[in-house]
Structures are given as structure tokens and as C-alpha cells.
Image 1 (cartoon, protein in one colour):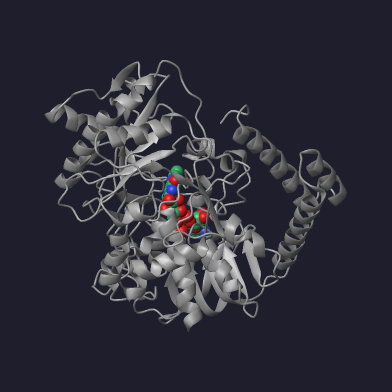
Image 2 (spheres, rainbow, N blue to C red; image 1 turned 30 degrees about the horizontal axis):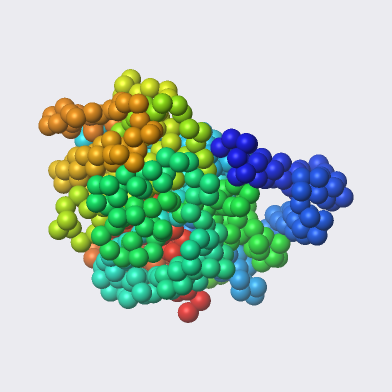
Amino acid sequence: MTSDTPAGRAQAIGRQLDHIEARLMAGHLDRRGFIRMATMLGVGTLAATTMADKALAIGANQAELKRELQPRYDYIVCGSGSSGSVVARRLAEDTGVQVLLLEAGGAADAPSILNPAVWYTNIGGPFDWGYKTMPRPGLNNRSIAMPMGKAIGGGSSINATVWARGHKNDYDRWARETGDPAWGYQHVLEIFKRIEDRQGEPDPARRGKGGLVFMQPAPDASPLAPAMVQGCAAIGIPAFADHNGAMMEGAGGAAIANLCIGKDGRRRNVPSHYLYPIMDQPNLTILTQALVHKVTLQGKKAVGVEFEWDGRVRKIGVAREVVLSTGAINTPRILMASGIGDAKELVRLGTPVVANLPGVGQNFQDHTMVAACMWEPPEQAPARNNSAEATFFWKSDPKLPTPDLQPFQIEIPFSSEITSKQAVPTAWTIGPGIVQPKTRGFLRFTSTDPKAGVEIHAKVLEHPDDMAAMRKAIELCREIGNSAPMKPFVKREVMPGPIKGAELDDFIRNAAVSYFHATCTAKMGKDKMSVVDAKLRVHGVQDLRIADGSVMPHITTGNTMAPCVIIGERLAEIVKAG
Ligand SMILES: Cc1cc2nc3c(=O)[nH]c(=O)nc-3n(C[C@H](O)[C@H](O)[C@H](O)COP(=O)(O)OP(=O)(O)OC[C@H]3O[C@@H](n4cnc5c(N)ncnc54)[C@H](O)[C@@H]3O)c2cc1C
């Protein structure tokens, strides 16, 4: 985003505010100095004073809690990502309980995190676990990046900020699979309405206002974004004002994306909504750079966790429950290290078997995007917000019950290491994406060492129906990019052009990348491959629950942060109901 737009200017001020807030919390700036500098940036005196006092209270409280670690907490939540920060917040709302939140990453205050326009620069960097898939035939034996956020906020700190709730049918399918109507759309919709603070046209029947989670349709969007929505309409995909309301109860449509970007242009990660407001409470201890190794068990009962922090391995006990929210790769890893998984695999790794759950690490699901359909414009328009402001959901086959395609417009050149040879530096793209994959992958652990490798057999595009859906997605994206409403932005189509058959399939396999939505590896349900039940309790183990993207039985239709927030909210509802 450039600083000559109103949003760009707001963001530049926001960055300076973050900087002085971090200095205040670290003791490098005093309260008076902070207030003076904040008011010079245009913040009112009252607001600047409130900010200073809150930041100082949080800093002092967390420093004190860290100095006095307790031998036992009522709840230990592992992982502060899109689900874990919700779980910790909701549990700590009961001020009578002590909650310990352990996060392997550090603070989420780096410029590359706060500025949503450069979210993709975090891939492969210090805030990414740096996972890669095993080379497999579906990708012409390429290995692709499978980024997972490693900082307070997890994925919500490095993601593209898109708030996509999923389709009505996704939740109804989860309810059928678990036998619990509380996972169904009717109930989940009520949670969304309670937690959302959505800006834009009111829709009280389906959207929330005044809740914890701020989101808005991309403000001051690039002219490319509405042009793509019009391009969709030109080929029969209806335009909607909102891609989360009625559109996701039906056959799909196109819209400007809902983004978790604040009015100041900065990322609003999930902890900024959920954790920050209560970090000055004495019953919520947050340790960063705390790597959980395993759950400690007595027989089949979770009694605490073993983790590494501040240079040594420690054990802390739990009075009520341990909750794993470490994401779809590390949650199965911690389960395996704790003796919970496929007995044959545990024996191979030399780990005593506590619970034989063959589903741990199986059922891996992710969305796939092709990088990409690309056009060269007469001149490059500056990217705005998260550089990806318009999307559409559609069916590759009208007979399908749920849309299975979700391409995204990307306002910059986007290509894989292979298709980059065809790419040009002045370009915009549409990334064709499939969001109801039939491929099921798996994780294979090579060791139970918490820092050792894991093989990710994502099996991308190995199901023929996924290839067929991707061909259709490319066809639609090309039609949209070449449609009349997009003509002002097109000098020429760069790739893939009108290729067909084996040539198109080869392009797809060379261009496919992860959509960054790894999920489903410790699914909830009742069958023998399920790992948790409808109440998110690990089968056969007492006082251990999982709340993160790994419990999805089927991946949702669209980006996965919002559904992970729902999983965190559901865990809290379940625990509070007793
Ligand atoms: C680059 C990228 C872009 C994305 N874009 C979008 C988007 O725009 N919109 C969207 O909806 N979704 C997006 N996603 C996906 C979304 O962010 C994730 O699906 C979601 O954050 C997953 O939530 P989670 O709670 O399951 O895990 P995470 O958010 O990954 O959180 C897991 C947390 O646990 C911590 N952890 C892991 N292991 C340990 C351990 N051993 N000890 C202690 N802590 C540990 C991690 O550091 C992390 O903080 C994107 C993801 C990425 C990586």
C-alpha cells in the first residue's frame, strides 16, 4: 500500500504507534514520552493516555506472572493461533481459574506482520515453521511450501487477513459426522453473529456488529477488484455485497473480500481481538518462545505438559484440562510424542502406546491454488490492503451441492518456481483455487523429537476430480480476466493462454501451490479414524482436548481462519457448559 492513499497514511501512523507502544512496553520510553509522541501522531490525549496505561499494565502483569510460574494451572492451552487465542481468552474470562498459554513463537509486532500488504513475505521467514511437502507425482514431483504461522496469533499473524466463514453445508456436514447439531450451521451462525464486528451494509439476520472480531470489506480497494467482480457478472457469476452472508448459503457468487484490517490499515490478528484486552488480568499467563514437547500423562489421564522455555525443559501440571491448539501439523506431532496415535507408528518410533488412534496425522486436507492466470496491464496499479481484495465462489459442476472453486484476484505477479519463467514483472493475476478437494493426504513422523522433521504427504491433485475442478477453475478465471469489464487493465494475457489437454495438465501440476489451509489431521467424529469426539475430547484420554484446524472432519469452503475461531469458541462453550 502506498502512503499517498488515506489508508496508506493511516497505516504509516499505525506503524509508528506500534513502534512507540513496543518501546513503552520494553521500558525504552516512559508514559509521558509515549503520550507526547502519540498525540503528535494525531491520537487524542485521552486515547493516548488509555493506550499507555493499558500497555504498561499488560507489560507489568505478564512480567510478574512469568517470574512466579505456578506448578499447576487449571488449564494449559498450547498454541496461541486462530483457535488457541480464542480458547485462552474464553477460559480466562472466568477469573476464578488460572490459564497458562504456551506459544512457541514470539511477539507479533514485526512490520511484516503488522502491514498486511506484505503478508506473503513471511513465508519461509522467521514467523513461519517452514514446512514443505514431500515431492509427489500430482505436482510433477515438486515439493511446495506449507507455511504455518509461528508467533503469537499463529496463522492469523502471517495470513492474508481474509475473513471467510465457509459454506452453510460445511457445518451441517460436520454436525452429521459428529452427531452433534451444535456443530451445524444454525448454531454456528449464532456464534458468528455474536463475535463479529462487521463494517459495511448491515445484515442483522446473518452478520454480527459490535462483537470482538473487526472486519470490513477491503477499504479503498484497487480498481482491479470491482472490475473482477463485474467480470464475474459478465460470465454469469452474480455479484454480492458480501461474500459471507447469503452468498455462502447458496450456489456462490463474487464479492469484494472481508478483511481483518483495522481502520488504521494494520492487521488485526486473532489475539488483538481476544487476548490483548485481557492480558492485564492476573489469571492469564502467556509464555512466548515456549515449545511444547508433549502432554504428560498418568495412565490415560493428562496431568500437564512438558515444554522448553528460557533455556530448559520444564514440566507444569494441570488441574483441569490440557488443550492442544498447535495447528494441523504440530498437534498430531505432540500427540505422537505423547504416545497417542497409530500403535504401529508409535512402536516404529519407540514411543510407548497410551492410546491407539490410527487417525492421528491422517485425513490431511488443504486447498490448492494455481500460480497463476496472469495478465500484463498497461501500467501497474499499486496493490492495496492485502493485495488480494476480490474473490468468487462457484461450482465446477452445477450438480454439486456446494461451491468447490474459490479463485482470488491478486494485484501483483504470482507464480510458482516453474511458472515464474513465463511471468512478467508488471502484472496482476487471478489464482484459480479448489476448495472442496477430494484428495486426502497424511503426515508421517520421522521422530518424536519436537524439532525433528515430519513428512507431509499432501497428495495434492492426486484425485482426478481435483484436476477436473482445477481445469474448470482456470477456464473461468481466463474468461473473467479476458472479459469486457477487465479490458482497461489488460494489455495482454501472459499465461496460461488457450492451452488444453496434456499441456494444460502439465501447467497445472507445475503451477499448483498450497492455499495455506492445512487442516483435518485429528478429525472429530465417531468412526475409528476420528481422534476427538464432538466435545473435542481425545478418544480414550482423560482431560485432553484439541481445538484447532486439525479437528475439522472436512475442510471448509474458503479460507480457514474464521472456522478455526469458531472451533475455539465451540471449545469454550463446551467447557463452560460443564
Ligand atoms: C501464509 C498464510 C496465509 C493464509 N491466509 C489466510 C487468509 O487470508 N484467511 C484465512 O482465513 N486463512 C488464511 N490462512 C490460514 C489460517 O491462518 C489458518 O488456517 C489458521 O490460522 C489455523 O489456525 P489454528 O489455530 O489451527 O493454527 P495456527 O493459527 O497455525 O496456530 C497454531 C499456533 O501454535 C503454535 N505452536 C505450534 N507448535 C507448537 C509447540 N510445539 N509449542 C507451542 N506452540 C506451538 C504456533 O506457533 C501457532 O502460533 C493462511 C495461512 C498462512 C500460513
